[in-house]
Length: 326
Image 1 (spheres, rainbow, N blue to C red):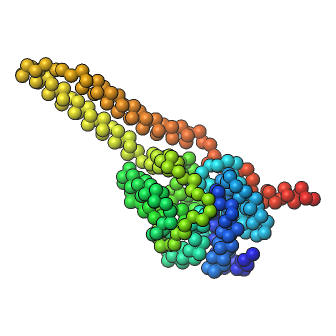
Image 2 (image 1 turned 120 degrees about the vertical axis):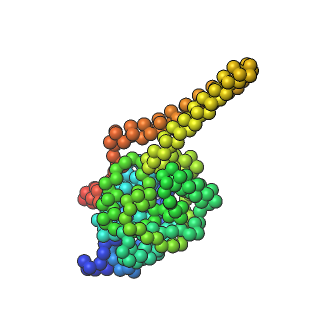
Image 3 (image 1 turned 135 degrees about the vertical axis):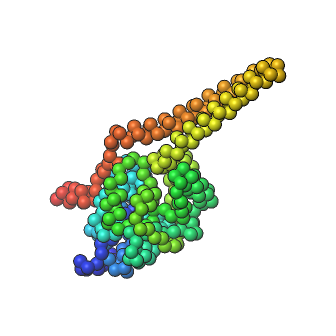
């Protein structure tokens, strides 16, 4: 166990880690995080959020919490998703500065000190820039494509080398807690707030444990949700596209009528008529589908359901074990 610096003068740093499928590296993660915080020096609060991990991650989290009271565990009732798990962790932090990082050790705990040092230059938020990402080709390209599409629809300027690994001040996290919409994406929410933001180039390790849960289908779903929750440009584009098609159809109709009356050329072409009908029909269904996506998101928001549900915390689990033992 790493000894914690003593004294109220040291800042309290909360480290929030959503946990899914990386049970075997949690002990190593804890040891390296504790060593990195001690080197700052600072006091540690580590919050591990078990997002219904399919392995025995919750048992390991309880063991770590029993060994070190600075480790707090939250066991979600089911899999709510990475960014909802991050929200659960941030809702329970008490630190002066808050670190968010992944559990698979691709985010190196040794970089925490550099993030903190950069934040002391006057930044409210500092993100780690993964200049050389140690991910597969498909994941890198899909991430680049997503941010290009996202920037197009939101008229923004995003950086695909930035992910969750960051440090934020307590003020930023308190602002984040006010954002309770169902569609969540941590780094974009933080950047949207507009606080003074810096970046630090960090090393990015290859994934040694498990595999990413973000397959192509989930990436597309996440991208669609984020874009729809952040922009109404798809609706405007569908209106513009519909207007263009109507204008072309009108001009073509004028052309056919003029050709019939002035050049005595009859209108023929059953095939072209049917193709036009199917094209317009498909366009209508597409526009209705886009509108339906927005209505569906509005419906989800109006239900007012909680962002996550907690099955148990480590403090409750340890208390229960103590009572059962006695």
